Amino acid sequence: MFDNTSTSSGIIYSERYLNGEASLKPTGRDKEIHAIRDGLRPLIKRNTPETLLIHGTPGTGKTMCVNHVFDALATETSVKTIQINCWQYSTRSALLTELLIQLGYPAPRKGKPVDELLSKLREWLQKNRSVAVSLDEFDQLKEKTEVAYDLHMLSQQTENKLGLIVTSNLPPDEIMLDSRSWSRLNCRTIEFEPYTATQLEKILQDAVEQTFKPGTVSNEVIETIAEQVADNTGDCRQAFEQLLQAGHRAMRQGTREVTEQDLTEVDD
Image (tube, rainbow, N blue to C red; front, side):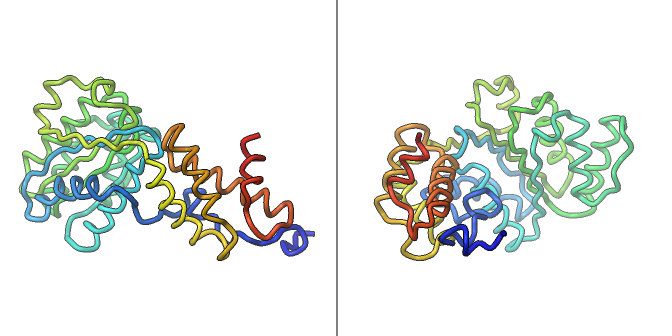
């Protein structure tokens, strides 16, 4: 009943890169990656880094680029890296508690005072090593100013330093963090523009190589998706979704390649 050979053409051998389970190497973001790297570089010698605010519309590679830099930081240096999503941990105490857990502390009891959480974080920095912390979806955090200032002050109070990256879909003036706070945090902004058609073509070509059997997706299909998405949002996740849906349709039809007709059906 579930024999794939009887129900589909089998042109897809892995969906991991299109459904978000795995990440491709960043494309067209060298400038942004270098800016993130340079902002965090002082951590290697236990110097105070810049606080980085990374912003841009969804699907522009913000988290992927942070992950890319963090992977290099973790493998090439002694700096510890931690990533927290503010959708999941949206309050000051919840976020600080999760940070402690990721640093290896037992889960603190609920309702523990913020001062105690910060004391534990300070203790970890004093005894261990520098750490880079990425707060994804920062605009969803309820106490942005307090958390940003908490982490900034920790880095001022210990020999090992804490580097902070906050990532947001909103521009700085819509995040509701007052200008004086940005100044105190020595904050540097890095904007991610929507992907162009040329960038999306390269991203899709890389994704096709990891997803489809050779020769099953033409350059014309890739170009069409790239142009449509670039004209609309520049969101690479939308491009991935269109490509995956077209691939599924081709498989249901039992054909051996994805055609522009499959894209038309997706649009309909």
